[in-house]
Amino acid sequence: PAAAVIRGTTGERELCYLFGDRVGRGYVFYPNATVDVRALSSASDPLQSNLRTFAGSTIALTFVGVGISAGDRAALVPSGTACPKATAYAVTYGLKYGGVQTLDASLVCSFLIPAAKLGLQLCYLHDGYPNG
Image (spheres, rainbow, N blue to C red):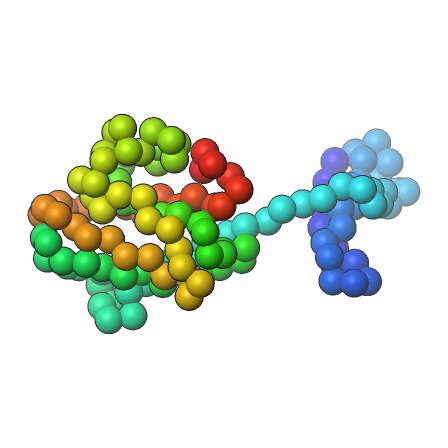
């Protein structure tokens, strides 16, 4: 079996599915199925190319991607750890790594890094998807 997402006549995405036992018959169109695709393609600080900062400094990140919008949230966690659910971040980390920050209308959020820490990774939370 295989699935394909095609652009419809009005620009929306539409789902078509090919059943493994019907290869010669082609794809079957499912007009009521919806696909929500979101992808973060980059997060960068326009003032710094290497994303290094000093303890006590603020770093502002600009986000780019498909489905990225104001109201989405980002957080920093130690490298090699799993991103926690949004509801668990404050309990696990508090403001230790800058807290959970909300993207503004320019798709930017800022983190105040209170203490020196090597190797932080970014967690991204799409608005409307509270747990990841």
